[in-house]
Length: 328
Length: 100
Image (cartoon, rainbow over all chains, first blue to last red):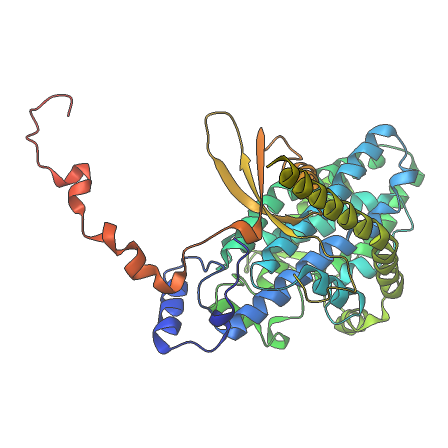
């Protein structure tokens, strides 16, 4: 339920803290009306909001291709995919609201830049192959990140993630299928796929966040059960999953140091450019300003619709009340 | 709900319950904002049943829900805690009694 009790936000007596700690220790779920430490509530709101914003902003890079999809089949698939991203954002905003966050506030914080979204969506999509590569690599990385979150200690978030993960699988498969189709095509089409992979490979690795020794919040998040694996563990898992898929597709991942390490039982890979990551997070990516401006214009342009619907609902409610009173 | 009221025309929050197929109960799946109950139903269809997840939807204004408080959890549910005789396993019946 989306009913937050104000009292539960204040620092609670020791037995409440104990009950919270015991629930986490037994790997049970925290639910909206349970007492929780302020830090946990703030962390969850920030994590869920950032995730929701990523889904909403994530509609834009691919949405640009809806009107230019090469066939009705591809267009229908892309529409369904982008609609899913909107849906994922809505599930997540709904989960954030169970913690006492206000949806309109969250939107304002996204537009004003006070809350972030995933840096990957600040890269442009100049080629149609990008639709396939985003499905394969970006949604593939998202699945790696999100599957463990189905066991998040915060119940509403975990339940939203279960729903989202089921749908992400379609996203990744449609992307890979699209790329396989292009790889069976002309030399020019194969070159488009390779070029797109080269642009998206490193930003996809950045999606897992900074390396563990530069991720100060990881320890607390793991203790609270809101994070189940470290950034580097998930990044390694993604590389291990993706290399054989790249081989099967026939593309070359742009990393000279990428090779199987039989001792570790994992692929070794080169260093991620964390300066680029920091710059994009700080707002200096290729499309940061454009993405936020687009979100703001959608919000501004939709204001009259929200107001009109609210006015209509109020008028209908008044009329129903009046006719009930006249009838009684 | 009223963080920026006046600036934005906020729609009220509705809780959504889905019957996934005939023969099953409606189950809470999440919430959404809508101007009125009819719009809430349409939004719930678009948001929660894009892949045939439901055959029936209930939407309820979140403010209309009365919930038990977690703070009074122990005393509130205590009446059922010490009545083990309400469970069939409380009764010992010899193994050779059939169909029991």
